[in-house]
Length: 122
Image 1 (cartoon, rainbow, N blue to C red):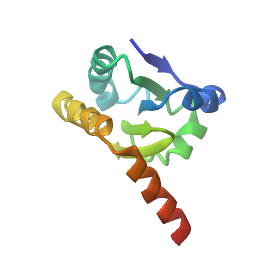
Image 2: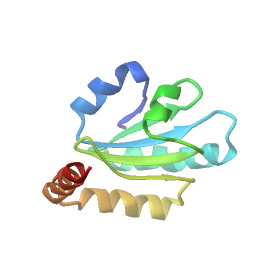
Image 3: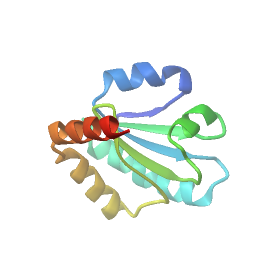
């Protein structure tokens, strides 16, 4: 299973080593976070080619701020260092799996071109 508890200190090295990462921003006291936890863990077992990172927002507030987490749980998908999806709220297993499949099917050359074009406009 490719599941880690990610810290701010390990973040840069972690994203440098892994092309596909799914983040679960959570807190111990959060009911919906606890409900989503088993869905996240099951997906990590099903997809060993993707890294799954749990980020406790109370212990890692800098990471939560970096991803602009305003409510929890928040799920974020990163591929080739680009956040391709981020949304608050626990997802049902079927929707989470659909999101994983969509991330796997992305044309990353187009995504990188779109990001470059947006950066030029700014």
